[in-house]
Length: 355
Image (cartoon, rainbow, N blue to C red; front, top):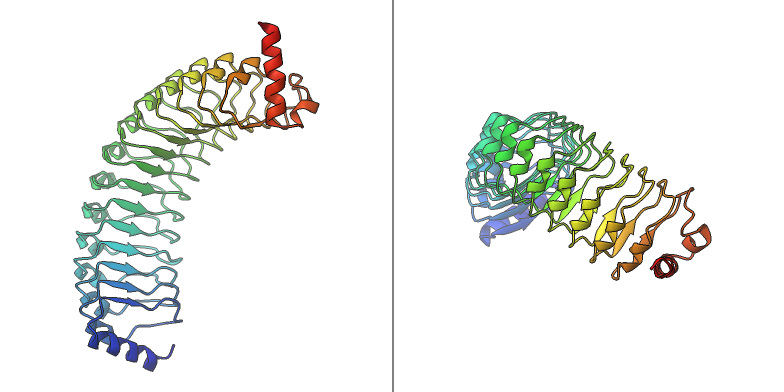
């Protein structure tokens, strides 16, 4: 789009007192100062362009509620961004943003902020003043720590920190008491603070691809969890207290170093999906048959020798995966190859014979 064409669009929008304007994918490398004429705009989409900077005049759009700057080439934001005092939604998926101006903290009405796929290595302490934030996405950055002040984001309900370099979390993190969804995939966490258990409103916790070797017993206090994802860690055992997560629907323990499961796992009575593939399990507790709502059970790539016949009592089980258990003799390989129904029929016969 030529500059002349862009000016015509701006002039038309100004005449019509437009409240929304999309300049999506127009190959824009810059914006003219005339953009400030659009004083009625509440939503402006500038995504998928080639903008390397924003003119300060953009910040005169004081009625803006939503600003989409995804997929540009921004390496910084103008300090004047603080003037967008009504902004509630700001999205900045870029590749070059290496820092945030401290003035961003003045966007006091911001509720959703998306900063994925940038080069942020730290957050300014003032960031914590964004006290109305409910959703914050910082996936695919270079964060190695979070400032203690981060805990002041007290209205956060969704926090996404996947693919960073976090090796620990500040103790103050536990003060984010409204969090319901927490994503920490692909970091370098080796342990969880016991204070972590204070995040009692969490319903989803994602910790795949970290370096966790154990879970604190106090994880049992996350009583509202419905999904817990722990694949690709270094877990060799589970605390029996995990059984107290009574609302859990999905538990992913794949790609760890588990050699056994605590019998107490049977108390997860609402569990529908259980992933324990790619571990070192040699046996399963018969009590696993008490997971009466289980529909999917993944046991492939372990060291299982036999399955407890009681598994056949899992009346809702539709998917049972047992491939690559080289020592498995019961059920035998020819039964395993026939799939879930054949395995359950075999185990049912074994159970009846046992009785």
